[in-house]
Every structure is written in structure tokens, then in C-alpha cells.
Image (tube, rainbow, N blue to C red; front, side, top):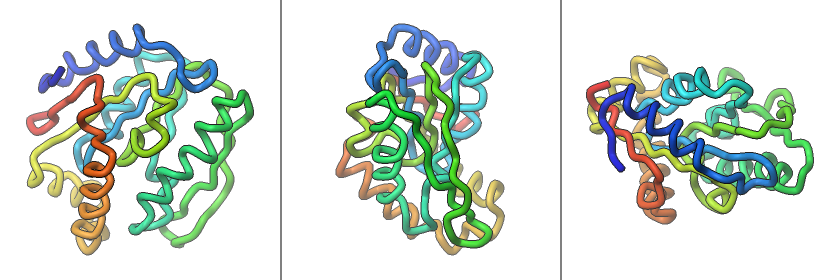
Length: 188
């Protein structure tokens, strides 16, 4: 199902999540994926308001720099989802973008609902643990403008490099085709 209205998208996402079964141990994992600038972080925040007790993981905390998309997808699996599926505590190393290195270790509390938002959230072996995959998209020019507004000029030199990694991941993984819900945020 594809939706363009933001309010309708939240309502439909809540419905789909409510019907889903846990696939990561006792935890429902909701992956909010799509290309950079599509509005994944804002959507996850809006969704979390309606899901008390849900914990949110931001892929931006996992990417080890501008060339780290594939590594972050693997780390999401190895450090977060696989341990949760085994009934163990999960933790990950947070990337410090300002200093270009790993920073503190983040422990995740046990939760029955985990929202993972960001490029690659639904990619790779992580699909085995997802209860719901929500895909956000927008026109390229809109996404580029949002990226620059969000990250200022710091993002500009990395846009094409990052977009190439996204395209390769999404093509290899067919992420969009597996989505339970597709939200077009071009006009949002």
C-alpha cells in the first residue's frame, strides 16, 4: 500500500504494527527505511509518540562515517538484532560524526517494540528479524534539499557517494519491494 498523507501514514503504520507478530525473540522490530532525506527520522518520532515503551535506534548512530552503510547494516544485525533474538542484551558502539571515530557504547533496554530508522534499517540479514518494514521515499530534489537543510553544507560533498551506496544496497536487497507500507513524503 502506498500513502502520501502523513496522518494517514501514521494511522496505517500503527494498524500494520498492531497486527504484526514478533520475529526477533519477543520483540517486534519495525524497520523504517528509504533513501536519505525521505523523512525517516521525523516519521519514526511521530510514530513513537503513539507507541509508549517503544525504543528507537537511529542508523545514523551506527554508520562508521560516510562510507559505512554496509558496515552499519551488518552491525545492526550482529550487535543489536541477533542478540535480542537470542534473548540477550543488545548494545552498539555509537559513531561520533564530529570526531570521525567510534564513541561510547549504547546499551539497549529490553523492549517489546523496537523502531529502527535510517537507510539500511531493513537491509541484509536484518529482514529475518523484521515484523514490519516501512519504506519512505520522496523526489530526489526534495530529498537533496532536506539533506542540505538538515546537515548544512557538511553533507554536500558526500551526497553522491552516499547515494551510490544507497542505490547499491536497495538494488541488491530489493528493500522497497518487501515493504509492508510505502509512504511518499514528497509533499509532506
